[in-house]
Image (cartoon, rainbow, N blue to C red; front, side):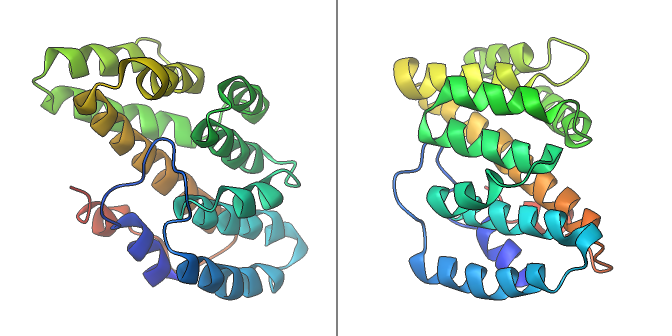
Amino acid sequence: MIDLVQRLAGRKPIQSLKPVTVWDAELDDTIKMVVGEWAERKEAGNHSHALSVLSGMHLWNDSLDASHTISQNLHTPSGSYWHAIMHRMEGDYWNSKYWYNRVGKHPVFSELSGYVKELLAEEKSGRVRAELEALVRTVEWDPNRFVDAVERQVEKERDEAVIAVLERVQWCETALLLRYCYRAAGEGADIDLNDIESELV
């Protein structure tokens, strides 16, 4: 399964903020078979986390409908998180915020905020810096600010440099949440973000 994660993490070009078609239909079938069967073998305590992994991998493959079918039936913070991301990607921004509000304070938020601060420290462009600064203005990560930033860029401004950095934030959000769910599903072998981030351009 780790090889599937690495393939999704290293896809070129990086996942769009608003994907329109499944990235790799054959891979989607493999995810359904391999990860779906793995999730079904999980005991009750780990089953919802395993289904969250399945939902997240479908989403990373731009298979929004497959991801949504799973996440809308997961009444957990991580299930709501995948549900929120899916609605953001389809352009249903209000609904995305609704589901982010149902997440509450997720453990991934602090890691994601740290990642954005790292990007900010490296960034030279004034426009991009301003967008990143807005994302980390508050002490806690506010996912609704990210939804607003995505909506502004996808629907109005379309600044390629800003979109590129928001895609990197989205990449990190997906990777962190997938790793969290994988660990919560009780897996011994871990998803190493250092390995998969090396694939990110």
